[in-house]
Length: 314
View 1 (cartoon, rainbow, N blue to C red):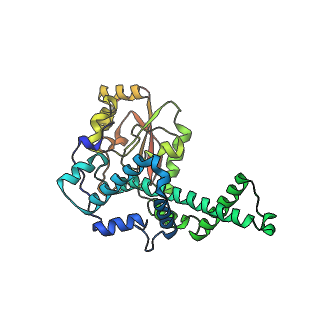
View 2 (view 1 turned 30 degrees about the vertical axis):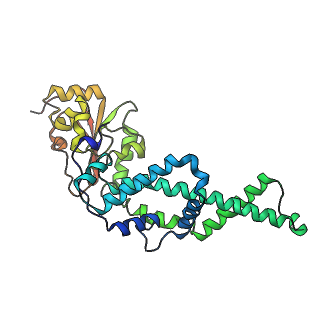
View 3 (view 1 turned 135 degrees about the vertical axis):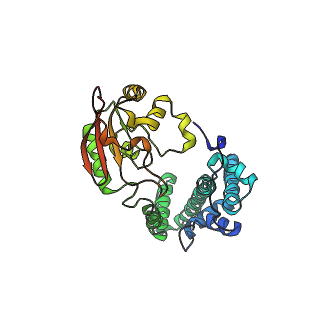
């Protein structure tokens, strides 16, 4: 697979000062006015007891490296930093996702440390005759009980393990359009009933149509949004369709690529992944092609069937 290290860097805006960026990372508060205090408490406890993670020193070290790259990329612009972060598309959020492995590991270790402390307390209480009747003395049962109590307390303190905060953050990325909408989803659902299982659907990679694969199990010709730098890696047949599909009636190379990939339907949807995206030129003027028949249309998209042995118009 082609990586960004082989291409020019991507110019993303600076997110903030180094202190602000690092502070928001350590307190998990990029999109919230308040830190995730209880998560912070866990990873701090894990840091205090970090000796128990000595066998994972390489993992923690990797997390530190990505933390440094994230802070540098999010806070500064320079040729050196762009070169170092180019394998991750110079994208601060990709780097932060990798850096988070450090905090997650420390938080998990902190939870285990809290569990051990809870067991010690429970065993101490077990020495009191009255409590002996309540607290099981078997270690496995004791550990399970204390762990369950810790999870319940943690869930209560974090209002459901920060579920609401995470839901609000993710919901902002999955609005009803323009990349995908309820109306467009209805059109894609139609494909599920039309398209044979062993065939592909010609699509515009920028209009949200690659989601037909995840939503309905229908395989598109282009399974993800397309950067220009990836086109040379597509393979000959897909390159031909990307550049010339609307020459289906007149270009033998297009018809050959359609047969080779077993493309049976075409989907053209409204709305794009970015405001700068436009319709793929090779998917314009499809209504004039004799080799296609429109089988479904709505305000959010159209579905065409590729006819066997397409005949030119006129």
